[in-house]
Length: 121
Length: 83
Image (cartoon, rainbow over all chains, first blue to last red; front, top):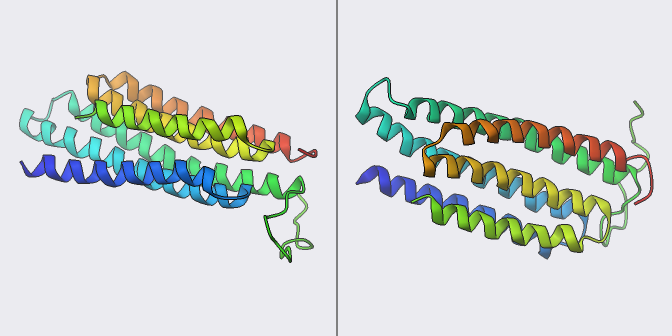
């Protein structure tokens, strides 16, 4: 069945990016590059896994009719995806800003480009 | 279909948890914690599809928003001192 094949492909892409993000936490030397690996890869993997859930529940929703309980599952999974997409980059930016302000230098860095350009709020 | 995905996400969470335990300073631990939060939200959605329970996905939405606020507070805390 075509829907199942598409779902398996999306699950494979999402799982691949999630494990890449988790391994990247161990392979990179400092906070900023770890943040770069972990946040982007897990956000991308989360998009693909939740879209796989939505595809599968939409296929059941179409076959069962408009008043299926799968409709609620689809819409709430979409709301969870929107929440991840809004909150994940914001928290990554907050962590990077806090790490820079408490004095952590990037590994093997020679020049800090935002040393004097710090915004005071 | 969904239970192997949930087990795989659990393996990813354990790999990220090793970074939280080992992490040399506080910001590295916070990065690992943020990764774990995202993976927990995704695994809650996957388990909600596995058991066909909508309430798991509602819990996932609330967990995503609360973990965002938690991360912001920890970032505001480590901004002040030397860690």
